[in-house]
Length: 527
Image 1 (cartoon, helix red, strand yellow):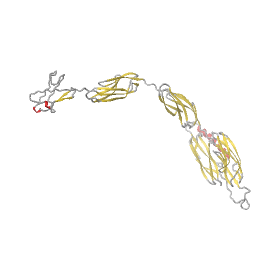
Image 2: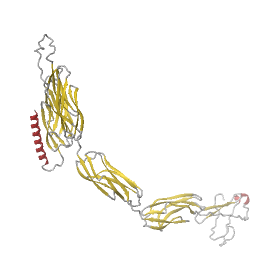
Image 3: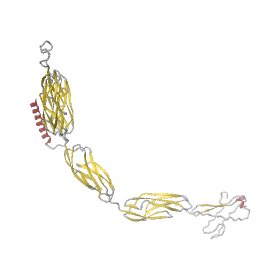
Image 4: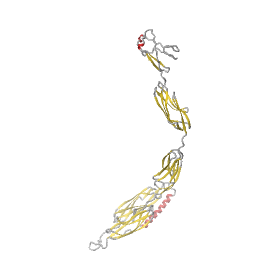
């Protein structure tokens, strides 16, 4: 009363409060005069310590008169304890691969009248694989998920259960042996014999299929000289066949024969790859210009001869011109197979230029050979001064002479295939302006490049041969020369090759020396 506990009684056997129980006990609350009008509240405390409000008296019903005993009927309503029921259970798949994992979930609800906490467990073959503790208020529901639970069982069928303290749901889970991986077979490789130029695109086609009724993914590789040069990931459905193109845009292998392979994890097919040296394009060179330095009268004509040769590896079709200055006075169409040559004769052509010195020559699309054409006054021309045929006091002029000086560098080292640059100074020591070919000759004709240079009398210029490719040269020393029709300078190029066999450098050096001697002898004869 008023927050004060006045009395209590413990009832251990069934009975009704206020009446005799099995133990004959009664709860009697004695009041005082000051309690008149004060309500009385009754409680029941359960055995687990929960205190339940039963009811309270109406203040008007209790007078607390002295000596009076008033009977109060109490009504106790007990709550049902927490009860965790399983409403929904979902096993994502009732089949799992050996060593695999499963995902499952369950909806749990508290169907009791009290809050509670229980453990929800996933049990397989009487062994708990996963669990989660859940707290729920009366009427509350919650989803419990068990994700990626590993099933460590041999192939077979096993009983499983999802359970709380109040309910258990059961089912059957089948564990299957893992499927054999797909076997990728190579049925064809095309071509089996492949020839490519060094540095060119290299490609093969391979047809791949699965050997059994199993899908899968594998990497198909193209291997040359124990090096993977391309690969493709191939995904095949069961019994599917697919053709794969494997390629390398610029396969840089020394000219030789190699075994190549196309391979999967299950099979390898081989073929032969032949790498050849790059071929030179057609190059029409011009030599043996005759006459080299003709003289004609004004209004006269000129005929010329020359030899043209295709020094390249491809057939050539070109128009060769006979030029005086920059004007073509005659043409000749030529068709030359590789290494073929032809002698050309240009018929007499009228020269419509005034007296003086002119560059003339025979020009192909790749080369030229030139000389100096001198045009003299005609003998029957007007003397202009009374008939003495012109002044005898005119100074004489020296013809153009192109001399080579300052070869740079005079000695040079380079790795095989490395590009080099060679330059020289060329000076016209004559009085007349002229155009001449300046030639770089490496290894007695192994590499030949030309530059056409025009110089006035007394003028000098630097002629540069840049990015000269040394791929085709052997190792060791090689003589090179920069020359005009009047002069030449020679130098030494040493080609270095990694991991040379013993004695190879000496042999190459000896051959280079012989080649240099032959070159000098040839040029001496030519001079």
